[in-house]
Image (tube, rainbow, N blue to C red):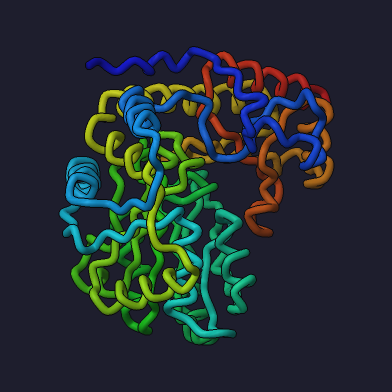
Length: 394
């Protein structure tokens, strides 16, 4: 059976499908005709193998309790070995309904109330929310924009804050959303050794690992054996295969004691069995989705490159940070000297676009906007042309 869904130029109407991205403009205070390139899901149909697996599952007609079994864990292990060169054991895999569910469970498993948790802003904003909403103290190690147009880590600040704030847990974004960095092994080693030195456990969110365009993805826990004993690695097919609405993630925990504590904590939420549709979709994706994934990756690479060239070449004072990973383009408006409110207003009301404003990722995101480039090229071209017209002769 051949892959059918590799025409990524095809535009699928997503309106009136309960789509968060398209159907909730009013609830988010947006104009009804706004073009959305915000939340990180793609405008592409998933692999036909995934679709077929879901149809088969639905055709059975019974949707009782379900669990993963050998064929499922084998598919997950196959994907990790092929694309990350990482050998994981079946017992290391804990299935949860999402990465942020797992991050919250890990925060509760490895810290107590008022303990300090460190994150690196600008970063995916639910990290902040899950720390604060669980009664932990938020500590921020701010990333900084270097002369090479890439964001970098302030290691001295990272270590100083771990010591001064008695940090217990570090939430790492690897690759980093939204600044589009694929952290190198040397960068991760410096972070990891500091965490080892002070007994800090690590949650490594690696959900964007399949979209590294420069270099290769480095699994944090795989760098050193010692890191395996302090790390919870969060992975999922949701970004890669555009199945976030099915809610499934594979959390990799090599250390037996950490895994036991994590499982105890997430089961305390009342969650037990993953849903059968999600299991079927993930297994099909990781067993048969290679052709679709590799074609998708090539398509998104072209979109990202086009966005960077178009913006830097056509909108004076606006640039794109060096893009290494994710399908999320991090756009710098700072040279325009406008407030974040003014930038938002121009993007929404003059360009007619719905993007993610940089401030939502932390104060270090001020003056930036995040564009989701995982859409048909024609849609991206239309959006960027709207952006150009809105910011020309301001």
